[in-house]
Each structure stands twice: as C-alpha cells, then as structure tokens.
Amino acid sequence: MSHITLAQQGLAAAEAKDWDGAITKLSKALQSSTNPAWLLARSKSLINLRRYDEALDDANLAWHTAYSRNKRPLMIEANYRRAVAYFRLGKLADADACCVYAMRLVKGAPAIEKDDPVANLKDPETGRWTATLKDAMKEAQNDDINNSKQGGGAAAMAMGGGQAPANAKEWRMASTLRIQILSAMNKLPADDPARTATAPAKPEEKKLADLSGASEEKPPASSSTTTPASKPATQAPAAVKPAVPSDTPLRLQEFQSNTTMSVSIFSKGVKKEKLKVDFQSSSVSLDSVIYPSGDEKPFQLDLWGEIDTVASKYSVTPNKVELTLVKKTPGKWAQLKSEGKPKEPAAPAAPSTVSTSNSQPAAEAPVAETKPAAGPAYPSSSRTGPKNWDKLDVGEDGKDEGDGSDVNSFFKQLFKNASPEQQRAMMKSFTESNGTTLSTDWNDVKDRTVETKPPEGVQAKKWE
Image (cartoon, helix red, strand yellow):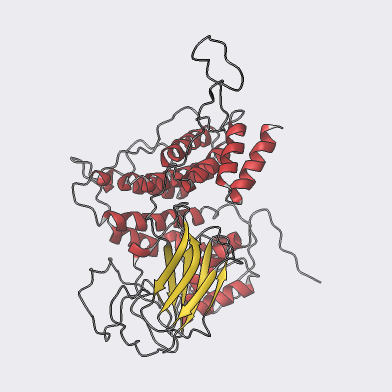
C-alpha cells in the first residue's frame, strides 16, 4: 500500500474521530513524506488522546515543513495546533503567544519577523505575560476582519468558495481560544510559571517521531536453549494512553429557555438500547453512562427546579446524551444543579428571552448562601448578556463543542445577535448579491442594489 493511500486513510480516520487508527496510518505515511497536513492531522489526534507533548512536537514540525513549502495556511494551522497543545499542557502564556502568531499570519505578517512579534505583550524584565482578557475581547469585537467590508468574502467562504478570506475562520478560532486562555490566566497568581512566555514564533524543530506502533524484538537475554513455549516475551510494549482518574466527573453543558432546560451529558459510547432514564420531579437518573475514565456506572442529576416528568425526554448520540427537561413552572433557573441547596422560585417568564448556563442569576432571586465571584464580564451587544468565558470549553481539540467552529453556526449567531437594522442590511445584501456579499451596514446598502461578486475563479451566470 502506497504512503499516499495510507495518508488518505489516516485523514479519513481522523475525520471520523478514530484517533488511534489515524495515528497508526499517518505515522506510516509520514515515514515516506513529512507532509505538513498529515502532521497536523496526527497532532490533532494526539491532542484528543491527551498525548500533548507529542502533539506539540508534530505541530512544531508541521510549521517547519509548511514554511519550507511556502504554505501560509498550514503555518497558520500549525500555530493554532501549537496553541492548543500548550494550553492543554498548562503553559498559558506560550499558548496565547501562538494564537497571536497565527492571527498575525492571517493578517499577512511574515512568518519570521526581525523583531519579537509579542514583545509588547510581556514584561521586558521578567518575561511575564501582560496581555489581558479585556484587550483580547475588545480585539475580537472591533478588529477589521469582522467589519462589513469583509462581508463579501465571508459569505463566499460560507458557500465554499474564495481563497482570499478563507483564513478569517482561523483568525476567529484563534481569537476565541485567546479569550479562553486569558480567562484561565486571570485565576493564576502573578508569579505563576504559566504566565511566562518562552515559545518563539519559529518553533523548535525535532526529528519525526515514529508512532506507527510497530514493535521490535529484543535479543534473547541468554544463549541457553529454550522451547518456543517457554521463551519469554521479547516485544517492546506498545504506547499506553495516560490513565484518566476514576473520579473524573462527566462534562455537562446546559441551555435554558423559559419553558425548558436542555442538558448535554458528554459520554461516548452509551448504548441507546441499554440506557435507562428515570425522570423525577427534581432529579434525573441515568443507568448507566460511560465516564471519562472508561468506567460504566449510574449517574444522577439533582435539579435546581422541578420538571414535568411526562413531557421531559432524552436522546442518545455517539458522543453524548441529550436531556430536554420541561420546566413545571415557566421561568429562569438560577443554575442547573441543586447542589443540596433549597429550591428557589423561578424568575418571572420573559416571552422573548432565552438564557444560557453562562447567564448570571436573576437579581430578584433570594440567595441561600454566598456564591463564588462570577467570572469576568464585559459590555456586550448580545441579547443573552455578557459571555462568561470561564465556562467556555474548547474541548480536547481546542474547539467549543457547544457551538462548533462551523461557518454556518457563526453566521447564525451573527444574525441572531445583530440589531434589526443590521439584520435588514444582511438580508438585503445577501439576497441581492445572490449570496456572495454580506453586509451589516444598513447606511451602505439601503440606497443601492448590491452587486453579485462571485469568489475568485467562479463565474456568475443567470438561470434561463
């Protein structure tokens, strides 16, 4: 089998989230060619198996091979993969620096700059990282890459065409990861080692690691004659995944409206036909689910409010169990779990308001006891209020599973959070341009017909 075929099979395995299979196939293919795309796919697979140091080495090598081939998009992705690996290793300043490197490449900066591109983000004497969460959030909201002039390219990207704006998605991914990183850094002491950045724009280059899993026989320990049955095992042990502690809790993600509370319980491999779900007025029992450690055992969720046990329902997917809990009394819950606290009355229902788990508790609700201070919140135009970046989970792959990095999800969220005037501008520009332009500037498009601007290499034709 050729190394090209092995690589294609490895990439398909990574796409299907068969991480072990992807690593085996890609490792064999990489022995023939250190293709940066293959290295990045293996790095992603290693991240999902919590083999962070190896993932970082692959991302670093991918940067060098992409640089030697003058592949800027792959250098951008390599820096993003470096950031994810550093983040999972707890090296927050290094992770944020790699996000900045990726974002600068998107903007056209050279891959190797004469001056340190992040010198303004760290203390020159101590090397401590000085970038702030507030600055990162302001950049995400106001940067030119998200203004109306970029609309045509962004819309074309959503249709699958256009090369020029294609990396805007990578810029936003790196920006989102920066906010998560700096939010975590806010909780660290000022002298914590994780606040010191040492990762350079040009990463360390190591030799390709052979992770194909091929075992080699060791020479016999002695020359004495032994029978095949009594010959001791001589093969090198295969690489073993780091053990996950047995007490590692399930990851939950909730989303609520006035009438329902939707809960995602992330548990891979749950068998729908074997799962038993028992809805009680103030709790839900599942027998059984699979914990991160691999243990299969029951799980009980004690709820903040009461639910309609008849109307509530559940569904099972390969990666999680989804609960749709119908509230007995419409209104907002202060939180998902009761945690042994007395139930509080739901806040009065607001017909058009939808809140998420990141929302702050209602001001009218009585507080049973002092709660920890909420995460940093900054002014936001979002209808759901400020985002609590402490609760954003980018997952092992560095992406938020809740909304994904899917382009369609981004545009849905953009439209949802836009003002009525911006929504009119988006509808008019997108419709009149046949889906090739997207503008949020009503003053710009209200008095003109928005022309069709197909992506580069595509010709617009009229249907007869």
